[in-house]
Amino acid sequence: RAGEEEFYRQCRAAYLMVCKSTLEKITTRQQLCQVLQNAGRSPSRRALEQYFPVSMSALDFEDVCEVARQERPVAREELLDAFRKIDRNSDGFLTCDELRRVLTTRGERMTEKELQGVFEDADVNRDGKLDYAEFSRMVLETARQCERMALERLEADGRGRVWQLGSQAPERGISSRAGKSEASPRASPRVTPQPAMRAASRPSSSGRDRRPSVSSMVSVSAGKARGKLPEPKNLKDWKHIRSKGCFFVEEDGSLASHHYRLELTQPTSVYIKVQPLDLSPEDGPRSTWFGVDTAVFILRENGDSANAKDLVSFTELCHKETFAWRGDLQKGSYLLLPFTTGCRLRKRSSTAATASRSTALITTAENGELELTRQFRTVLSDIFEIIDLDGNGLLSLEEYNLFELRTSGEECDTSAWEVCKANFDMKRNELTRQGFLDLTLMEARDQGGDPRDLWVTLEAMGYNRDLHLDEACPLVLDVFAEEVRPRLSALPVEALGWRLARAVCEATAGKGEARVLDASESVVVHVHRSESRITTVLQNKRDIKVVVRVDCSQSKNCVSSRGMDVFAVEVPPHTTVIGHHVMPMNERLDWVYNCTETLLT
Image (cartoon, rainbow, N blue to C red; front, side, top):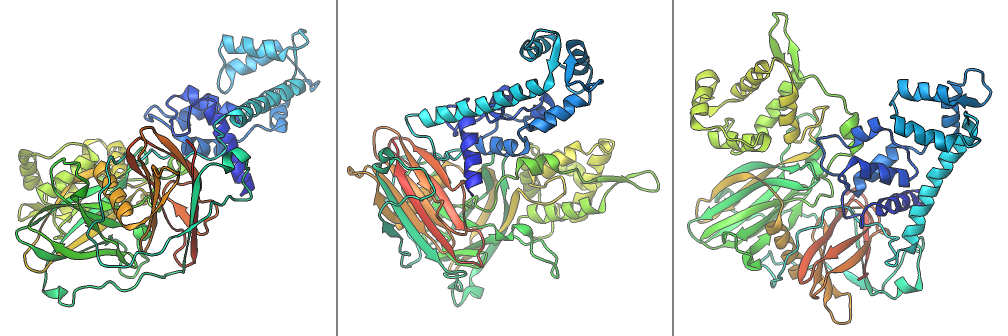
């Protein structure tokens, strides 16, 4: 762990030589090269092109750390071995002409300007020869100097940036806070406030020790608080409607999902539950995404109103992978917003993204015709299962359009749907599973077997190049109503944006424990523990922004939605933001949440 902390410290120091904060992103290859050089690395142009392809717009701090892991510091022996291979007489020297010939004809060829710079630095004796042992020492010493300069600047920073700043994009702020929301009657779990504590392994100073901070610790036994859901006794007599959907990880690491509109024509008791959709065979292991946490926030639909009281409640009851809510709803329209913390569904590492070889999608049959591979057909069948939102085994035009909007950004109009009806298997004006496979095959043949467009579709649906679903989590949503038949409509995939963030903040502030971080009570930490996770929300009542450091390094068997144990959150004035969510890494083991929030500015 000490080595890991030192690695992040070096990366942070290198990053802050280029950016003002690790919350900022790297937007050019030149910036990436500067950061890596500050960290003692020497990336090649080819490597930089691989780490930062033309299609990429930015890299965040965690991405750069991942790159730094792959780009090892060059060892002295590696440099010497490279030079010895071109030292024909093994005398420990290279002439400038020999070096010029190698550097302009092999590997990444240097420009004349770059060569001149090398010669000026390398030919220290001005005799036209390079003592490559001495030159190797100079190269490594320069790399060490870059590291030292970055670390010295970090230490000299008056703001004491020796903590890890989380690079996750900050949650959109919520400008108002409402009172408690409706919810199932249940005693709120106790969160025990403790005096400020500091990990002994972390550097301390009297200046930082005086900063106001609060701590909390929660111990949870394995499997505890996951009892049977209190379903209504006569639930089988209630009117029921179901819809499927999916969470997706976007290119920037943010999350998106289908949203839903629930319409009730009269007041009624309602029971709502949500869980991951299992696509595995009956006799096989469960789908790999089945451990992803799910929830649904229920909001009154008031157009674009920013009224915090839109929140009705959320599915807080939990049994295994199912989350549920039971309550009474008035006549009207409601938005059902699926939610996941991001603790278990997150962007795949850059290593996995670049190292994975593409699985074949198209093959040539004995008759010379292009066909879909068996593995690709299986994946397409699973995709059909996901986008068949009403579960009737067919794709309506509306369902197919939601799929097209997700994968291509375009819709299929009625005339194009008529063409589908004429050429592919349909039932009751809806596309069958076989029709969906045949439609994909036609598109592949139209492209002459070029799989690039097919990969665009697969990646938009969350599949990697091994055809594993690792950046998506299919879900199934059930709504039961006692007095009236509910109407549930699936809406296009949208980011888990400001409306949902506001609902999370309101629910946490309304049901959690509040602890103030300053004497004026203008900065408040709200902590809420539900049956499966702990959420921290930070509220700033001041007229200026504040920065709060969150340190969960003493927690055990925990995973944070931020992906880091220690990070900082900037909270704009008169705003409430999500700090992070924490869940057990392994639910079969006990877990301890031990977190300290410190006000920095």
